[in-house]
Length: 208
Image 1 (cartoon, one colour):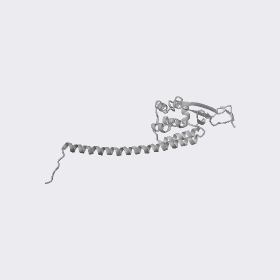
Image 2 (cartoon, helix red, strand yellow):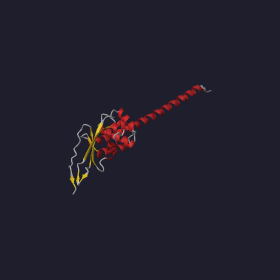
Image 3 (tube, helix red, strand yellow):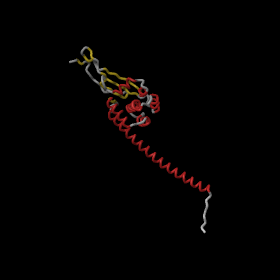
Image 4 (cartoon, one colour):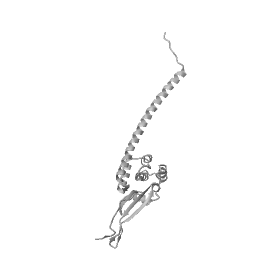
């Protein structure tokens, strides 16, 4: 006669519950590993995109100044990365980077992401770049006076990243957004303290 072993109900329940917990933990670990892999892949991908923007800016601003056409191309390149606010902070708000790179990040946050000025200023402060400044220069077509065109007008402003973020200087931000259009002949952004390339023109131009 075969001997039948009967296990107490509490033991059977505890054993089944333990198996369930082990299986659940195993599934959770697999899910966590997949999530980590996706996160790392995404982080690497964003890093590659950020480097493309940085390399483009470095190539265009070897003399520490940037023409507005290249500046707006960099902004368009950044738009193509589909960065979020945290991505911009992680990859472009580094105080060790050229301030022109920081500036492009600020422009993108304002015009593409629509980040409120106060939030943007706080992020700039946390990353210790809020007081970094750039010099924006632009040249406008000279006015006509009794058949002669007067000297082209030159304007320059020193602004901090925080000023642009809060739009305290909307005129400069507008110049950067529009670029060289209509009466504006040229716009140049320079690192403060660096000489900009000269812009020469005749004092008067006579109408033929």
